[in-house]
Image (cartoon, rainbow, N blue to C red; front, side):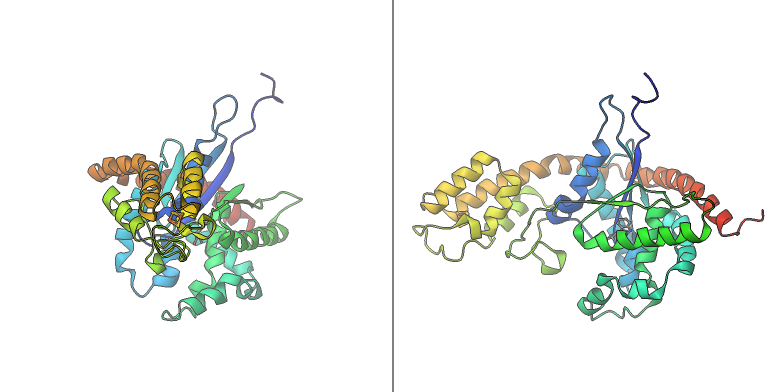
Length: 349
Ligand code: TRP
Ligand code: SF4
């Protein structure tokens, strides 16, 4: 095979998640499922398309939860199990804990030197989050610096692509600005030390929780990836429906029913058609409709729960995955840091 036709070197992909507890279907559809697909993507010749790094952002958890970190270890364990259950695989991806790769902290400090305060104050999540989490004092240096730390997470691997949802896109944008500024100040000739990463926007379907609002931990309306089948069925049974459909004999409108939004994600086209016909003609009841939905959700969760049971029974294996991930991530990050330290004249020669 000639040089030209050989596939290009795999491009690096990196993303992270804050350990806030057990993950739900919204987290899965909006992030994790996409990560697994990127991990498994191959070129025509069967080689991996991307070199993937996925991590648990425990430093980032402390930016908001510094005053009560006691649940952090349990949350890290839960998120790791969810990662592995979803299908992230240490043979294909580097899976690690942020705080076990000190280069994230070092690069964060160094990038802080060149990041104008105005850039940070302008990040939309900064004021939003402060207002939303009023019970926490977020007038801290660490919280303002959240995007700098996230930039370090990304740039320390000289990442090409960052799969995130729309809510995180502004953070990748500031990462690009920080990289550009770094290269402008420290780059020689036009050699880029820190390439500008690109967002890989994760399409996230509308995923309502059991109360019809967006599925979110803070609303208490979630279905967890780890919920056993009876729990999934019980939760869906109480889910809100088209409010105009009061009696079994009333026809309903699937287009305004949150149960149907979930059918669109978890049920076959055939089932969706049956629901549409049955609902609008009062041919089926909501209980039956929700039962069909539960079948689809349970089917999606079954292989995940099987993997989860395996790792719950083999906690040493789960731990070893983070150990190995830390070794690989440290090695790759150190490569970047040598260039960064030299560029910032921290090396002795
Ligand atoms: N801020 C991200 C979130 O809350 C998590 C995160 C931290 C991240 N560092 C990252 C995501 C680096 C992508 C790349 O979801
Ligand atoms: Fe919603 Fe299904 Fe009931 Fe129609 S039958 S209102 S789609 S739950």
